[in-house]
Image (tube, rainbow, N blue to C red; front, side, top):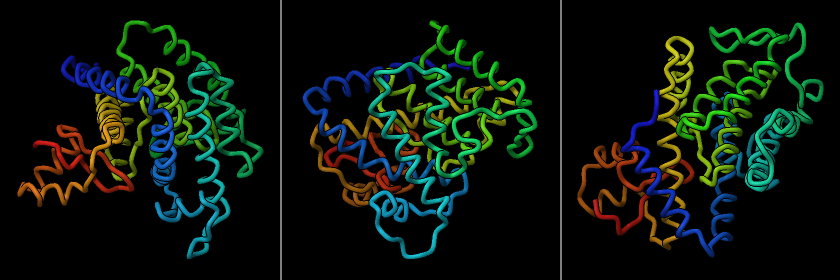
Length: 294
């Protein structure tokens, strides 16, 4: 499948507005990106069944005590993934997507958690399964990763978002590592977006059902449409948030916006989820510029 032309035009228009508004506001963009790190970390870890809440993740990243005993592993997972997210923000314009970079990200993510498997692909005898999907034998992993990297870099005709979606589907199907595949895969999505000058996205735990469905659709029918839609909506939401901050908009919750304008809350929420309005989430709460005319 491929992203349709109206969607491409919307993304192109948002990108143009984002590029025009960000000039001279790089420090603001850094602040917005950094403030978003706990939310990005929380969601990616939650997809992998971490028990940490968003508030606990925020406290851990600030080196504050949390109100319950949490495992040392979950503390490391939060801190390590935050390092990966920040590293990608800083380095995405400097380095290419390649095998060495992926292994380096994995070392950063798993180091201190399980050093025996950090920074390397699965070796002989190391098999993994995700639900009903048994990943390819370890003997094939490195050559398969080489193949999808080559396909991604040499495809000069496909739409950038479609390429990123397919790469993610292929990467997770290979499942090249013993642990951390999902978190590294989602980190690579953002490396690819930021490498191309786009803003990063958050694949959210609340949409985990659709996210997992995307892999089922790909493995059963070679259909990439579900993953493309997830990335499209995530990118639009990310643009809407940053554009609102660049413009200095007064930002209110979607709930307050609906009440103020006497609108149907379910209808407005549906429009937000479909990105038909410039709404975005902060700490899981939908927000929108106060002066937006619905």
